[in-house]
Length: 157
Image (cartoon, rainbow, N blue to C red; front, side, top):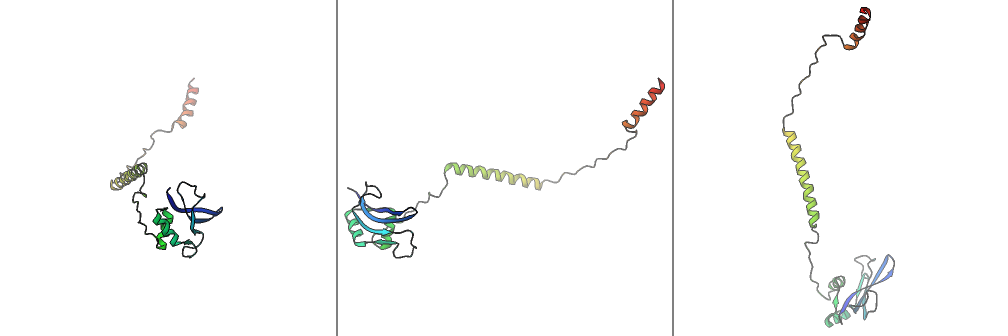
């Protein structure tokens, strides 16, 4: 039978309170346990002495028998000086996945292209605008000549 030292949740909804228990690793989280060796109240301040209470002698006994603490309980035992915990480091945990890296590269390529285009536009000389000279009309507009032409045609007929 493998034995673990773990947290069993108690307390009301939104008001957690945990017991530090020694239990069969196959039993449910809040189910049957072998022995209660402490308590943990996460609602108390971190520097409060009553936040974590552990019976260090019973914890040492169960560790000597072969009980395996969970990560959170191992932190508590390390703080109490019962068992030294090896510091764990996962440098890859914070790295983005493959798809996120691809999207970031595409975004950066678009930004670089826009910057290059803006730099080229700023570096190119401004085009010289040619003035368009309107020629003065030599003949009268068609609207003015149209009624006169119509009158002349009537007179000839």
